[in-house]
Amino acid sequence: MNNKIAILIDGNYFFHKTFGVFAGFGEKNPGDILSHDGERNMFMVKVITDLCYTLNQVPNIEKIIFCKDSRSWRKDFKISRSIYKENRVKSEGVDWGSFFKLLDEFGEFLEKSDFIFSRVNGAEGDDLIWGWKEELRDLGYSVLVLTGDKDMNQTVDFDTNGWTCIWNANSKKNKITTHPEFELLEDTYELSIFDVTPTSDENIDKLKKLLNSSSIDKIDTKEFIFKKILTGDEGDNVPTVYPFKTKTGTNSGIKKGRADKIWENYLKSEFADLSMEEIWDNEKFLDWVSSLSLRLISQTDNKENRERFKLYYKENAILVWLNSKTIPEKVVNEIKDHIGLSLHRSERSPLIDKKLLIEKSPWNGTAQAPRGFDPFALFS
Image (cartoon, rainbow, N blue to C red; front, side, top):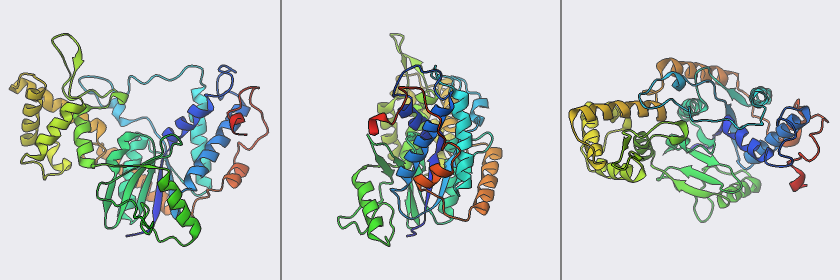
């Protein structure tokens, strides 16, 4: 197995996570957060510090890709039951214009330090991570995705040539998600999640420390995708496949327990050995899953309800499943072109030295944040 590692960073998640810590300290209303040079400088130093600390826990990194959301093609995909991400509400008291401007500036700054800054019009960070993961695995890399977004669990994989793992680098719940067949660690530490041959005691220590500080979650990606299509994604305002009202007037649908039951029946069905790519728009499968699901949720199993179920199923698959069959061809092609050009320009290893990055950054200024608004005071 190879020992080339590439890191995919969910840039929007990383920025929001760091900002959540930053905005939680000091005075609650010292003016709009990030509206002053001092606040912006302090926030960006915190971002660089967190990023370097995280990346320096991983040995043998060859490429680091910082992925950023653009306005999603999903916003223009009309479904019959809701509007994608319409339920997202931005916090008041935050200068969001400055936040997203800093996110762009940070990506551009990282590019000058031999990271890859990845953004494509119409593509979310999830789409980019999916596209990069597919390309990097084909090129012989093992891939570590740095995110706290559970949607990325569907990108986990493992074979004799390498792996893709998800790392939620959080001090309170440091977690690594990987494939069920992947042996994470032997007692001797001779094999690890990174499957490298360490060249120094320092690398061995890095592996031990990271693994010992992480909880390990093994996931079947087919099962994850299968159930996610059925249950939808409440956080992105994607409803369950067949929402309905109970006799008491409460909203219901295919939640986790029912999705588990449908999956159990699927494993005994004639479709069990087929891939998600083979079944998701297969009329015979859709007839089977719609009939079973309607009966499980005590809804009438007739032609009209089955057709409604099939429509909702396909809509959910398009919105929650990262796949070349669900992402528009134009977006897929633009992602592929962008990746090809980015790899062509990427030659040197990225700089992950905190001190050097801060010194060369445009945020290494002397401006001070308002008194009482120092998120680092607790750590001094």
